[in-house]
Amino acid sequence: MDSFNLIPVMDEGLGNSTYLLDLGDGRALVMDPERDLRQVRAEASRRGLSIAYAVETHLHADFISGVAELAAVEGATVLAPEVGPRSFAHTGLADGQRVDMGRFTLQALHTPGHSPEHLSYLLLDGGDLAGIFTGGSLMVGTAGRTDLVSPDMTVPLARAQYRSLQRLMEFPDSTPVWPTHGAGSFCSAGGSRERITTIGTERATNPLLQLEGEDAFVDALLGSLGTFPDYFLRLGEINKAGPAILHGEPRLMPLSAAALGTLIADGAQVIDARRPANYAAGHVPGSLSIPFRPAFATWLGWLATPDRPVVIVRSPEGTGNVALLEPGDMIDRLQEGDTVLDIRQSGEYAAGHVPGAVNIELGYLADNLAAVPKGPVIVMCGHGERAMGGASILAGSGRTGIAVFNGGPGDWARAAGSDVETSPDLATAG
Image (cartoon, rainbow, N blue to C red; front, side):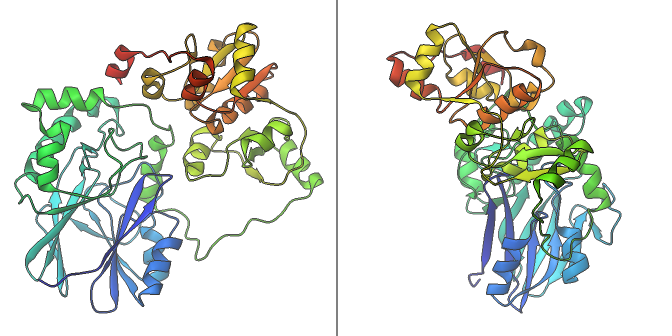
């Protein structure tokens, strides 16, 4: 079996890997593409490949799929699980079905768990097993979470996930494994920073595969689940229908101050994508701080109101301010009685936080403003970027006396000569 060319295209912000496979005859297959197809198209163009197949392992909850766009613009054939019908042309596959692609053959393997319809795909090269695309089933050091469909399906899907992983363990140790979700993805139940693995490596090191029996697996998997953005509950239906076809890269037009004022009056929400320090120095009143970085799309989807137009601010002008604190300033403010609001996820908070800090996750802050302590508040996360988003939510609700710590718990501990506080019981509970 000759070597073949498989190119992972990673989105660090969403924690996902799309795969581009050179089929060897000028055509390519794309596995689990996101809506933003610029990287995939660039990789294909660089190699002189046309995208012939766009394949999905499951109906994605964490991003809008790009398969409909590839079908409409590139003429790609969409392959997807036959369950969970889509409203656009596609070929539905069931367990064991094969699609011949010349040198390569793709064989569907039903691996429910992350979703009921989930398929993994065996890649056969000249009839020999070359590897497995496992999507949201087996991942590096973990498995896909099972609580994204509905609460009453969480445990049954966790049991299905156990059986799916046992089925995957029937393949040889040397078999390459190519998951879609990885580090940084809310679809992943913990896991490693690595993106690809082998059956043998997972058999030997994956904590979920070291447990005795289905019940222990289910308890461990469910105990590892943290929170996830509420837009996950909406994207499945969007991916069933297929998003609007863009045909090209959309352009954002600059706005004058007068036009911005009109849009705000008509209900638009302002997203300030500048660095936290710029936002702290001055910003449009009521704007939401979401710094432009790899995780921008996730936090935009989580914090912005879905049915309101969005205006993005990137210029330095603005009004309003939030105090940005360095470690020494924070120590002084704590001595004066300020309260720390830690807006990280519960697992991060449990691993180490400033003693006495109140934990309300950023994604749930807007709905829990009454739980924020009265008086001056210092908002913090791991470095300051999420914290500025939390401060903007508080400021938008009318709160004053807000400051943001420019750092994380470790920075405070080093400056104060103290230890962070941990919450082992909370960490265990996930």
